[in-house]
Amino acid sequence: MTAAGRDAAREAGRDAAREAEREAEREAERDRDGRGEGRPRLRRWPLAAGVLFGAALAVALGIGVSDLDQVAQVLVAAAFVYLGSAALGRRSAAWPLFGLTFVLIGLGYALPGVDPLWAMVALVAVLAVYGLARGEIRPAWGLPLQLVALVAAVAVALAVAALGQPWAGLLVGAGLLGHAAWDVHHLRTRRVVAPTLAEFCCALDAVLGVAVIVLSVTG
Image (cartoon, rainbow, N blue to C red):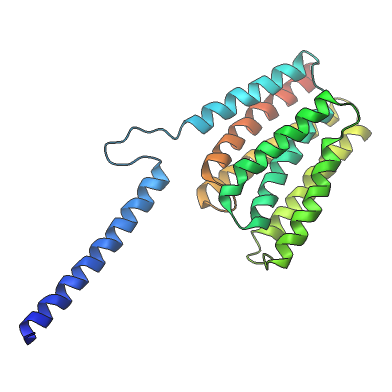
């Protein structure tokens, strides 16, 4: 190959590398926006689903089908999903973990002897040990910070039994709204959990948190 041919090949290789880099940037931008070229925006389904789910839980609380203890378990479940995803080191694990909490809380509704709170705490211990064994102690915003958030959520759930209304409801409502802000942060940074789960959880927490506070003040 002549010198001119080698130069042309190198230039073509550099052009291909630059184009691949630009395509990766475009793909990341499409992922952030939740849409691609010519593709309708479909990423609003987590928001809609979260609003509906939160409203259903709020109605259940309002008509007496559920109580504040069970609503507090939702807060613990949200923190559990984040911790589990951090311990496993996989954002995609968030939805299966959410499904697991849904089953546990459902069993708590159906079977009086089942306490979803302590079941989740037991699973947290297993996941935390597993995550530490895998070296998930870093980064600090991963497993360590999620463990702190989980402890705070459990503390709120335990405080419900000691506090009367309206303080218990205000505490749980504030906890849910705080976790909604937590969801927004993780949605923006795209850390720990899948963005769709963060968006869904944010809507659920916000709707349910506001409803709990309103019901506590007016009830």
